[in-house]
Image 1 (cartoon, rainbow, N blue to C red):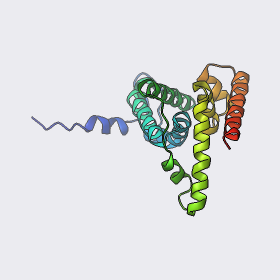
Image 2: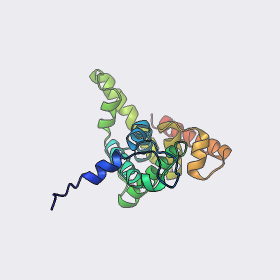
Image 3: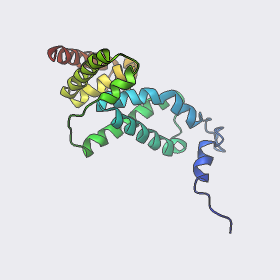
Image 4: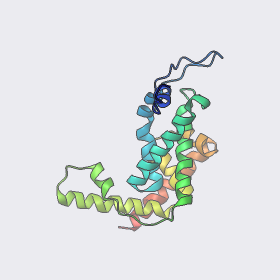
Length: 191
């Protein structure tokens, strides 16, 4: 009997032929390309929703693990894969909030990632500013954080925000604008 290679199925899936199958399905973009193209936006979205770099990294990893396991079954087209990934990430973040009690955390890791080569005084000022924004994000409702995360964190256009939140585009634009205004007001009042 030949030894079993437990990594083989995953390897085969990651490098499988993406030319469709015998049922005439459209070819798929390799998942590695999907990951490389969309992971930065998914991370920023998760960071805006969770306000914690480590939790955002975990949520991003979970979202892509779920997407990877469903990729061949769902077979999202190139135009729809981005929104599909944001839906998965949104569900992962929602699951995180269901499992965790909300609490305050320090965000020095985020500050170091934003501008690692600054002098100590500038780093301290940036730390205070980032903490102020993250504290202000925590004051917003979950819906408002989601809208801010999709627009400011991930840079999505209003049409995509509308699709992800089941709103029409104009409602998404207005709701997102109001959420960002509330965030600005909360940041301004904390100074």
